[in-house]
Image 1 (cartoon, rainbow, N blue to C red):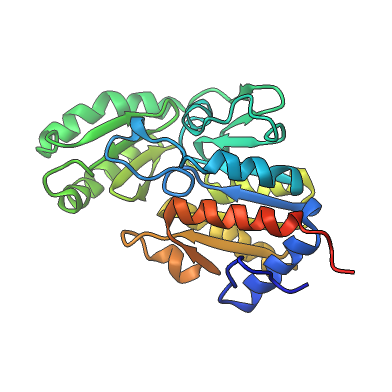
Image 2: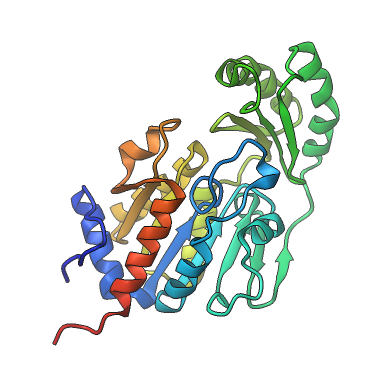
Length: 285
């Protein structure tokens, strides 16, 4: 099957194979998406992030046409569900939100969240964090987001966002190490979280559980590199896949590895809508 307009043509042969496989066998495909920067625009205050207005309508059209749709995010699952507006939406009955890099799971079918006990190092690091920020003189403009199972230190609102990010990198790595955590850098954010969970692990486990034979993953940030790596590994073993970068001038690593680059969340919505349109067409006789 060719790739119909207005779907963008992947720039790599493996990406073109992945998209063709998705179009040929959509019932065996998983469409997986990051939340912030992919479905929702990046904003200075992460508590004000909301899904792009076209995201839910596009997902509602697409979800019944593919095997599964999963949102994989570093946020708590319940927060992503609320900010995404995913609850009780007709057509999204099989949506899954994997929060905290897969440590939490929300299923639209039940409306419930499943999660293990939090890592004790998160609370310990959070208690120590104010002293670290005070010692570094980094309070002004720095925003600390309590994610429950992780702590995110945002520098986007600082007077010198990139300078503050670089200044805090080493102290926060030291703080995380003292409490058995790791630091996940992102777009002007440093997140302290437990080891052993990332979007690559979450995506691989979900694909195994769902029995998917094809995957499309869309992300925008450094935290999505693990999922990109997982798709690359799957492709090396014969599972077709498509890598989509929700483009940003702040992060180039994903664009360099992507099969398709779109213009942020609005471009992701256009891609999802075009994919739904292509899958809705009757097969050529």
